[in-house]
Length: 467
Image (cartoon, rainbow, N blue to C red; front, side):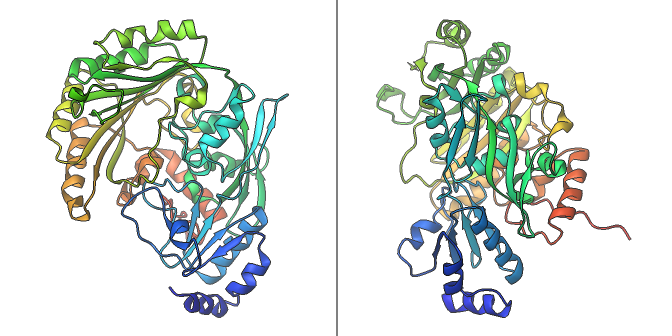
């Protein structure tokens, strides 16, 4: 849609034109042809070339409210972007409006109460680095450039999950702009139905502009990366030992061909390895003892475990990396020797430039929250498994999608983590919300967004009214 088309759409709906919108907002409006437009429409996921009619870099909740109202009045598709990491590419619209929160980055830490009010344009890395200067932390994921908005609304499974639970378990309140443009304070006492729904239900219920988050004392961790040979015995042993470890130890293991990293022996490049990221949230000497069984599984190819600040645990990122990927996410009931053999066999058979099976060991604090307490219902899951094939040419998509589908079927997993669902997996959204969770979410959606304005997400349609 060109500028004139957008203005026509706005005018026909009786809403403000783009020049008037620019005057109304504190933030910046970017249109096709403006400097920075192509950069502003680029998201993390590769292979996505969508051209929004306008990108609004909101400055505050009032800007967000105005843009939400504009989308409702005009019928233009609305995309909401925090960090731009949506696996399905939901952070950008084609022909619609992108509500970009990245300029909303205020963070206010309350040292006495160990809480923070954080704007949702902040990345996990920015929040974590600021909190670490105070010896505090909130758990997000394992990647610093992810926006805290999206990861939190979907649940948040990271490197403190066994010690402190999901990100939503530390969410105390939120500022939420609903489909009618209202700016609400949402917590256990105010709009409790919305507070329940946004803890795992994704972006279906409004635009979260600020979070009130609990912080935990965490001066240092014992952790980093540990590279082990990826035999079936090592893979199964790793999962078993990580499950048996104290709750202070959280582990994410990527079984994959060894990348050409400078600290890995050149002769091991391309060899199937387990690249594990570990974080022990406790005293270093206790951390040494906790990781000893993992180190003992095989002679490490590289052992980079040491005392470090928590932000250092995040996996280093490659600037300008925009992978095209086929992804399947599921929960599995442990990884025994046969399942580990299946993982190794499928990875060795892959034709993708890079294929990965990621295993996140769960339990601990996450499992102690009742399943019905939040919209994240997979509290009893033992391991989250994510199967990924990275490829470069669009014509390779069919083959790589077939590979991940077959791999996932062989693992016999159940359910789904909504933050890792791809653009072709709308049919699986219901698997993310089993049992009565789906019905409750659909009823809340019907109350707060009956027109399904917030639909560019892993969508939960509003429940149909009974006649």
